[in-house]
Amino acid sequence: MVRPEGIFIERHMTVEELDKQIKLEKNATLLKRLYFIKYRYGELRVVHLYLVDIM
Image (cartoon, rainbow, N blue to C red; front, side, top):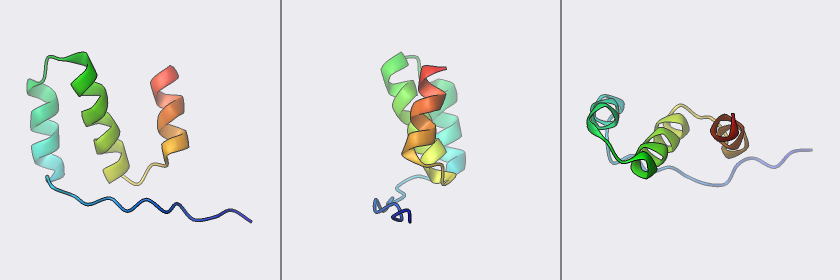
C-alpha cells in the first residue's frame, strides 16, 4: 500500500502568472525552480519531476 503524498502546496501565483514569469526568466537555476512549481501545480509527484529533470 502506497502512502499519499503529504506535502501541501500553497499557491501564491496563478498558472498564468507563472507561465509569464517562465517566459521572462533568463537564469537557468530559477527556470528549473519555476518549472518544478508549475509541474507541482499540475499535481505531478516529485518522483516524476526528478525523472523529467534528468532526461
